[in-house]
Image (cartoon, rainbow, N blue to C red; front, top):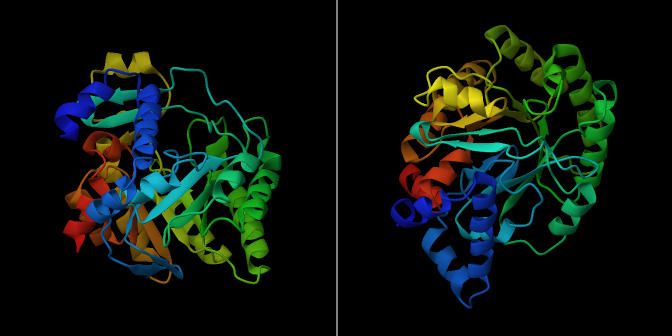
Length: 339
C-alpha cells in the first residue's frame, strides 16, 4: 500500500516537505482514539536484548537526523522502533544550510543531504524529552557542534550537550562524521578525537550511573584510519561505534553523473552505502570484540540487509533512507524476520 499509493504521492513533494508532511500525518493519526494502541498491536515486535548495559525492546532503531528535535518519539515508537536517536543537536539553534538541501536518487534508493545540523537547539530538545515517553523505548542523543564554533573549541559544544542531556537520554552518539559542517570531519583525526572522547568519558565516569557513549564514524575512512579509531575506542573506553554516516563518494551510482553534479555537495545515504558500511562493521568487529558494541547503519531497507549487518558483527541496526523508500512497516518487518 505504501509503495503503490503513499510513496508516489509523497514523492510529488520536495523531500524535505514530504518528510514534514508524513510526520504531520502520523501525528494526526495518533490523535484518533484507539489508533496508537492499534499501531502498537500491529507493528510492535518484542525481541529484547541488552547492549552496552541497556535493555532494548528490539534491535531496530531510527537513525539521527530523522527526528532532530525529539518531536515524534511517540509516533516512531508506535511504528515499532526499539530505539530512537534524536539530533544531531547543537548547543544553540541553527538554521542549517540553504534549501534545497535534501535530494532523492530513486534509481539508487538513495538520498543526498547537506542539511547542516539544522535543529532547534539544546533547550528545545530537552523540553521535548521532558514529555512522557512510551514505556521501554530507548532514546539516544546525537550531539554535535555549532557551525560557527571553531574546531579548537568544539569540545566545549560537545560537553555542553552531554551535560545538559545526561538526565534525558539513555546513550550518547558523538557525531564528528557529518560531511555538511565545514571541517567537522577533521575531528576524526587521532589527536583531537582522543582528547574529545577522553574528556566526555571522564565526565561520564564521574556520574553516579554512567551512560554509554558511541562514536559515529564516516564510511570514507581508510583501514589505517579505522585502526586509529579502534585504538581510540580502546584507550578512551567508550561503549562502541556507530558505523557509518553518509558518504561523499558517488562511485557506482545508477543516477547519471550530470544529475549528481547538478545536486552538488552532500552526504549520500541508502543502498549505495550498504556494502561499504557492512565491510566497516565486519572490520571493526574483528578488532573490537564484546563488550564493545557496534550499531550498524547504512543501506538497511529490509530484513535481508539488516541481517547482513548483524552477521557482520553489529549488535543493533538503524534505518533512515530505507524507511523513506520501504515505508512505515519497515521496523516491524525487520524484527519479525530477524526473530
